[in-house]
Length: 174
Image (cartoon, rainbow, N blue to C red; front, side, top):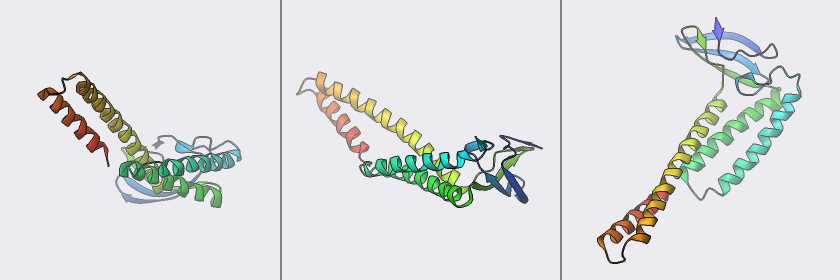
């Protein structure tokens, strides 16, 4: 049975409980990071990952404070922060992250993960989508502003360009 991203000998797997043809519950002690990165590093990685998580969490809290009330951004940052806090708790309390969700298909297994990992992934996905949305809105606003600048003040084109710019700026408010 092949496993995508098998963990090193430093990780331990517990008994498997089959729930569906594609999902198992398994007790997996991950001493590394995502996909068991640095799992066999000898123990120093625990403190390294704790330090990185605390630093990143401080940055996320600062970003939340400066978010300007953008609901999608706040939700995404909160998901990442909550997931990081959950994994931090495991790492401090147990010395490893407890993973238990094992999705698989046709003999191929995705690396085991937990709810905190899911929150981090969903939050990161929202942040990526948000960056594309913001990028597109900035480009639309820039082009609309250029139209306003180049149009004659009393023309229909100027009125339409001003309306377009106002609409884009209004939609940018969450």
